Image (cartoon, rainbow, N blue to C red; front, side, top):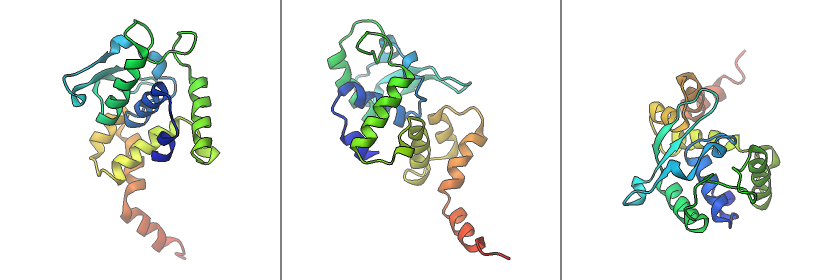
Length: 176
C-alpha cells in the first residue's frame, strides 16, 4: 500500500485510492459520489462522506479515516467547490470503473507491484487484511468498514489473519 501511494502525484488520484483502500470501495462506487456527499468537519477526524455501495452492500454516512480526509482536503483545494462528481474525469463526468482500473495498473507498475495484484478490488481485500492483521479490529468493525451485509464475507479476512489457522495448516500439511 505504501509503495503504491508513494508513486501517486495527482491529488485526485491520491484521494481516490485512499478512499478505495481505507473504506473498502469497489471500483464502480466512486462514480456514485458527488461533491454534495462530502462534509468537511471542524477537524479531519470529523470529515464525513455519504457512501453509496453496490451489490447490496451497506452504505451511508461514514466518518473518513484521517489519512483519507487529509487526501480529500488536498484534492478539494484543487477541484474547487463546483457541484458535480467528487472525482470527475477530464470531461467532467464521474471517473468510470475502467479508468480506475487503468490508473491502478499504471500506479502498480510504477510501484513495482505484480500485475496480478493490479486491480482495484485488491484494495478492498488489503483493507480487510490490514484491519485484521495489523490493527486487530473486531470482526464487526471490519464488516462495517467494508460495507458487508453478510458476516460470512468478513470472516474470510479473520480466518486468513488468524495465526493459529496458519500454524494448524503447517502442522496438518503432511497428515496421513
